[in-house]
Length: 300
Image (cartoon, rainbow, N blue to C red; front, side, top):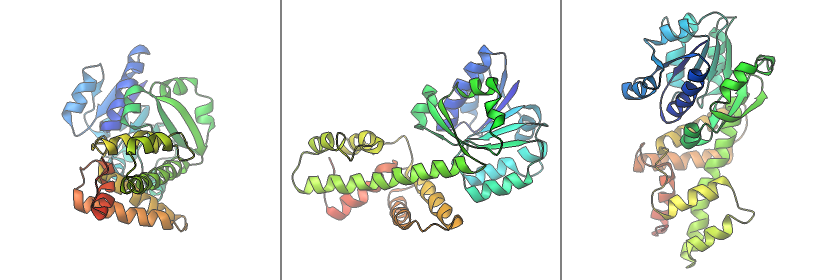
């Protein structure tokens, strides 16, 4: 089987590495493609082949994965004379693992050839999970039997996931991912306010954190993010600009589905403000610097 992988960023490179190990052990051929030649070379050194173009990868591969920054890049690789849709091999299955806009994905689906199966399959678990092969894949698919009856496909997905969650029909994967991110960013801002209350009251923030992580406030965000606020790193593994993009997708989804996301809209405004002040490439928890600046107090 020939497998194509387009997009070797922080998430894609980890997934592709684990996928290549599976391909090597099972006599499959992986083709990789990215604008960053160094990222391509790294996977090629492990036995993959460098794709010549989107057109070539789409035309030659039975199975296709994409991991891209935004809906803009997904549209670029999907549409046009050189894109995936016009050059897809018959009966190709495409797993789109990015965080994408539901409305834009529906447009792409409408343009796809009838024999092609498009699966929205965003992943969660971070770059560390991608590298370790422990991601959760959130799947939106109209015909679940495609996955249920294909044991080889399940084994392949298991090479970089711990769990494949079937969330519902096409689009359900994206909605699940954005719902998860919605809560993540709400809580991320909440920890800034909670910590500032403690700081202003003279409480040792490490002691406060030890209580928060063993109380009703406990969550992944509390466990993982607070230490990176207290040490001043603000988690450089993910950019503030990408977090701001995610929040825009969440508010757009609310508009698309006619849901009043009052909290999301307020949080998005804060991320926009932080992005303008600290820059796209700042660590994503730099959003908490806003409360530090307004309170004239650092959270250290």
